[in-house]
Length: 335
Image (cartoon, rainbow, N blue to C red; front, side, top):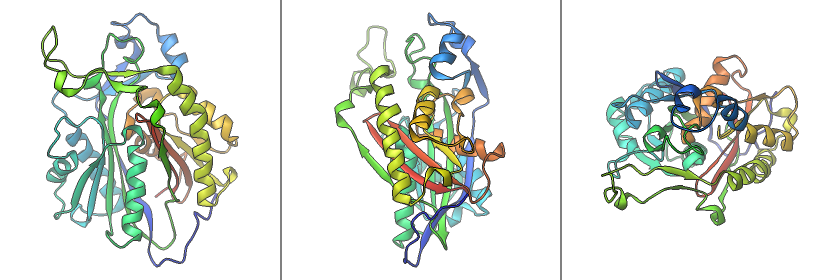
């Protein structure tokens, strides 16, 4: 189905023109996670919908994965790295404060001096990046923007923590955004709820990682599951509806719902709240990928398209939400 996406009188519009994904080779089933936590496969599946997840190799970096997804997206768009004007990487797991992951990806794929920077907006990062790309192109600052969501969350997992050990995975997804005759990215609906800033956090700041009884340790992710679930399942459905309203489309004009792959129960609750019809494809990439934070939406989009659930020109409602608590939602047209 098609929708308006609020066509404007501006001379330049933006749309996704290519998608790419990278999934690490190592598949980690629930049985492996259960070796260190007091739980069961049935409990993990019922609470999260996760059957397995992907972990990157020890020597595989976020820049390596981001570059692989970026190259796949460029190939899909029929472009070369030299065509990229701006490179945006959404990630929370780059291990270097500087240089940015975007700069490292740039070295690997070889753009012709593109502007490169990171976005730190946790699980909403990819949608933040799309919003920036849309404005850069419509404003005339760039012609082609490469947006990458990539995470290596396995490094920051406490595999003995029953509440988080089974949730997260690694991977990368990317989109090329370019000029279009008609709008392909709807207005972004974004914001934050700082009252929940402590609900998803590192267990210690970086300057305390060396001062540990057993020697240096990476910070681990911690999460207050119940309040995060309530916020995501109910407040984020409202933001998703606002994104459809801003784009000038209704739920019967949407072909797919692609929320951040945080938890299958959250996805189901949001779909019920939005009263999505049976014709709408709902992303459930979390089942075999885990929660990949900023990478989850482009990975899920790529899977829906590869599985034939989405075709070029279809409309997808996307929403990312996570630590901060921050969120961003928009309606996009599938390349």
